[in-house]
Image (cartoon, rainbow, N blue to C red; front, top):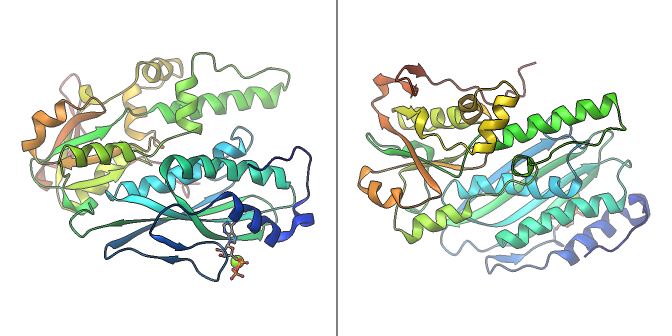
Length: 346
Ligand code: ADP
Ligand code: MG
């Protein structure tokens, strides 16, 4: 890997030197990647399938905070977040492009750390880095990642496919990444007031990891394929369960009922929520950045789904006229509202 301990100015290497170094570290592995970094365009072979493509733009201090986000984690997370979108279409991602805007505040070593994180994600998920763009930025860091996957016409799953009486399912557990963020924000505040104090994350590793090093649930679409379970609709949870289920119901012209008691919440998440005077259910509904999969499937798969520990059945699809609601433990009905991250709210 990039072995270099001193500070090397990016200017001493130049844009092309950096690109050469990146190319060296990312040999192509997928047959669909014909030509990668080095020409004016990459060449891909979808092999008669549909190409699924998704892109994200991440801006420093809007989407990430370098005070508590190590650059390696940032590279990893930026990649994962984007792969998650391709996976949520029920396709396996195979390529990414990475474009960056960086100021001279970053040394070559810092950028190498960032690419080490990307490399880790690429190796784990078998992704080829096939191109990108590099530019200087005056102030903050800018990252744009685009990923690509391929699926046959009947493999791809859309938000709009939910059917009446479908079971609503979610993978993993919810709310942990949000609480990880609360912990990091709390320690940042303490650190800014008194830099002598070391951060205290004792026994909170799971929450910090969910925030700094999330995973995309490629394993879930593989399990569903193996079990021959074909969801009717699917989305990944980036902005919180409420917001995402509303995307599915709106696109599918349906309503839904979600049961509070069925929401998968890790005990550490619940306990930490209480410490922050937050309701664990609200964290699970609105927290976001879980990158779990939310999908709806025909009721005939009920017995099969019940046997998969990584999947929880949390509700069902109902007619649009019945609206979208949460049924509380006390059996009260609340209207579900999207309260995901609002970047433009202030
Ligand atoms: P152009 O002037 O046509 O944009 P560049 O010199 O920017 O060409 O890019 C040359 C090659 O290097 C292209 O294949 C491009 O995709 C790749 N590339 C540029 N920047 C990056 C980057 N940050 N990561 C990966 N590949 C990159
Ligand atoms: Mg360019």
